[in-house]
Amino acid sequence: MENILKSAKNLIPWKLRYWIKLTEAKHPGLIPSVFKQKSEPKHYNDVFYQALETMGIENLKEKVICEMGPGQFLSHAFLAYQLGADRTYLLEIDDFAGQDEDAKMSRALLLRAGMKKIRNLPEMEEWGTWKKCLKMLNARYYTDGIEGYRRIPDNTVDFVFSFSVAEHIRKNVIRETMQEMYRFMKHGGISYHAVDLKDHFGGGKNHLRFSETDWEDSIHYKMDNYTNRISCSELIAMWKECGFSVSYLKREKMDKRKLLQRRQMNSVFSDMSEKDFATGSFVVILRK
Image (cartoon, rainbow, N blue to C red; front, side, top):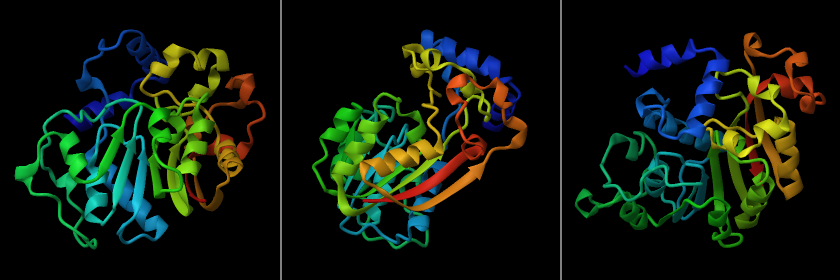
């Protein structure tokens, strides 16, 4: 059923997808959740494992980690605990995971076979809500946006991760968000960010058609696929201005069939380089 829905969505023209998302933002709950694309726990965990591999990390023993924008899943806190993490911070703009709901054991919470486990999860009999579980794992789940970042003490976090999150941070707070990340990371700390620069309603770059005034209004921000339209080069420059150095950068090119003509872009993007225009996604590792 899920694959059928996904295939059907891929046939929807971007203009119709945009209209649907905008209508849903204006009238929350109008579109049944069954028709909304959901992340899969396996994919969510796989990107975490990929990040560790890219960073050359085998375990997190006695480390403090932070994940920006975990979305609807909390499993990375469970994986980090088994890898030996001393503490985990999960930072969100809302409680998308439902921390007051009863926790249920699943394969997604267990470390992948073959990885070096430092410790086991608490016994199932001790579990209650997800909130209680996180407390047992010495994990903090802050759901109030930038305020959550501010609660993390200076120079205390070893590793920061984000997976398709940086592009969703609203433009008027992204610089402060990255400054806070720099503040709470330890000297020598490392952060990993996978960033998707496509339009999130068709896999193209049709979001570059809109003016800044239209795109950054409150309704567009409420769309669940809002992106800030900041290019790879602009994000890299921002991180460097915050004090980070770039130790790894890998860009992935767009499918040429989904690229706009430059004349179709709004004039605000007239200075975007061809390299940034053709970049669909990228992975970067930053060091403090």
